[in-house]
Structure formats: structure tokens, C-alpha cells
Length: 105
Image (cartoon, rainbow, N blue to C red):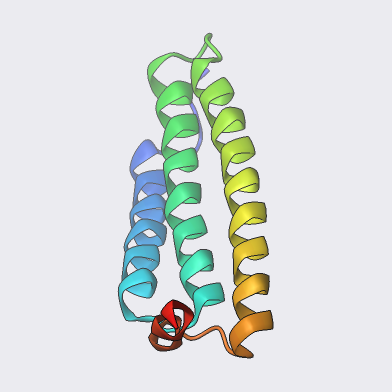
């Protein structure tokens, strides 16, 4: 059975998410916004895993397993990052990247 939506559409959405994540990571000063940008990049790679699995190997599930593994790693990374950001907020009362130099003192 031929998929209804062509692969290029998924790849365009994934590319837009990836570049939006990169742009947000480079331009944002807030640690939460940077974390959200990293999650956008990781989600775009998850979309690629699923799309390439679906279109290149329709009967196999390796792409789905890689995606589930990547989602689990993303959840663990987010939990650790939020814990670090909460500790930074407790010390500095701010989560801006320019204030992180104050942690050295």
C-alpha cells in the first residue's frame, strides 16, 4: 500500500523544526527556551527516524525502536536539565545565560 502523504512533506516539516531549534538555541538567552530548542532538534530527528523507516523499510520496526529510545533519552535529558535549571534559579533568582558567570564566585 502506497502512503498517502509523500516523504518530502515529512522531511520539510522535520527540517523546519530542526532549523527553528537551531535558531532558538543560538539566539535565546533563557535556559528554558534553550532547552525547548534542543527538544525541537531531537523531535525533528525522531520524525526522520520514523519517516525513513516507514518509506524505506515498511515491514521493519527499527526506526520505531530508535524513536522510542530517543524519546526516552530526551525525557531523561529534560529531567536532568530542569533539575539543573531549578538549582540555578535557587542560587541566582534568574535563569538567563549571562548570569551563569556569577556561579563561579
